Image (cartoon, rainbow, N blue to C red):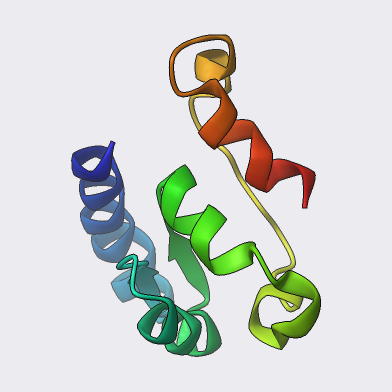
Amino acid sequence: MEDMALKVYNDWQDRLGSALDRTVVLLTGEPSTDLKLLQRGKLIIATPERWDNVSRRWKQRKNVQAVKLFVVDDLHMIGGTIGVSTITPLYR
């Protein structure tokens, strides 16, 4: 899944970041780094696990509250083996 996030990041960086002058960031899994990335990024790419880590205390994190649009890919996987790790962050 991390490979797919990196692929999407590279694609969006080329297409949207450069073309539209938007900052595209890829969450790292390190909470303090990810909070800084959230603050400066306009387009945030994350795996479900990485988003879960950064959004756990969303009521205390203004950066997470400031997210205006949340797009999820591979929702058909919810019934599969990664279902719980995918759906839990969506409830927040």
